[in-house]
Length: 365
Image (cartoon, rainbow, N blue to C red; front, side, top):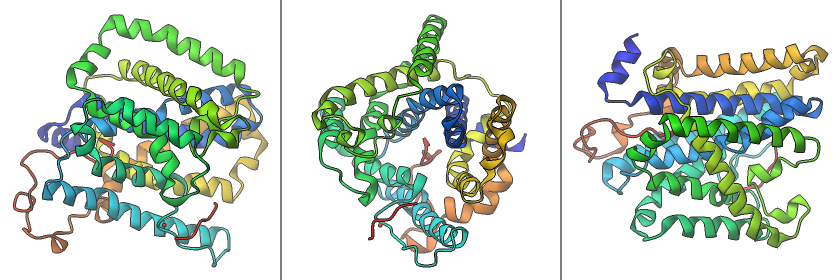
């Protein structure tokens, strides 16, 4: 494939492209499964299992690819064009989409209160802009985990900049900053892979056992733990415990990511496109009652929903979609920066890390 050769020529690592593609597939499956969790214990168990680690793994990979962020002009330019601009464009687009779909022309624009999946771009901006500080600390991971604990026991911070989520997932990003290629090479050894299987099995069995009564809000990290019906100070224990669990399951997942070039490898370069665009399909399914068909709540229907989610995210990662939306997802914006070319603007030669290594009124929706 032309795209595969281009990726190879740009020095992309097939392992990480595979990891990014598989992670965004899990994100889409999790979103697609949510309406099915109300009637299926099996789907609920899979949903809990995936939510226990898929966004932590996303944040960890993003952190790993942010290690070189050093406030150089070119990297700041990349942060603006690859994170800030897509956030502004899609936050407005999702607001307009909601107004039309819900017949609510008064639904407010808000750049401080990210809507639905847009919180991750806010988080990525804050994490990446603070990267030099984390790299300067002697023990960055304990500090990041302490901030996550404080966020979990603090009063609800509201929707502004999704701060509780930003801080809740921060330790995974910082963990990614501390990793080196040797860590991933060690993960992909066969002894580690075989050791990961019983861990995955135990996690699935546990998810099935707790599915009827477990509140998935524990895994969203959207607010204080007192909103989950427990003492606020329970966050002192649950936050580190959930961090350890997510880190363990992320390691198990990454251990089994293929390291060779596959049919899906070139799709890893399109994960940001798929992430930003698939929300329109997911929200359409809610707004227009796609899940009201009883057949979708049968075992065969649940398989069909899963297959449709995988197909959707695969299509959205493909080159034609990227060509259409490149102007808003990865704009060059040479007119906005001094220097014109990437090198003149401070970009170092060679491939630059992708955003996925990949707001004034509060609102709901």
